[in-house]
Image (cartoon, rainbow, N blue to C red):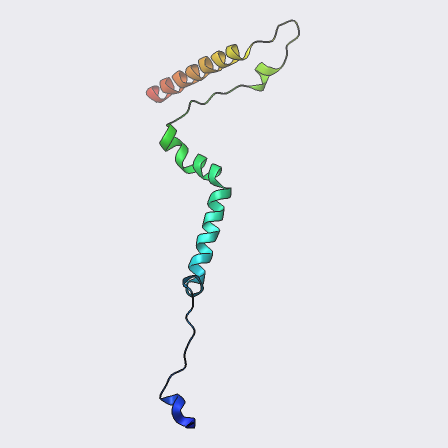
Length: 102
């Protein structure tokens, strides 16, 4: 066999699979997919909840109301919520009056 014959026929390079040729893309897709699976609830709540469900009313319960006062009976939760909504409306009205007078 002629020693110079290799110059006429190039080396055969083995064919690589797609995921070997695009290793970074496969790695990035795996990381993003795994993160999406494990953080799906957080991603939903941060980015999609307001768009899908719309704004949700915020209910505040102060700790002072939850503390048992001697001589008084504890209020049921419905009363707490009604009182909080009433206080929130009053706060809103005061802020509106303040902004109108300014």
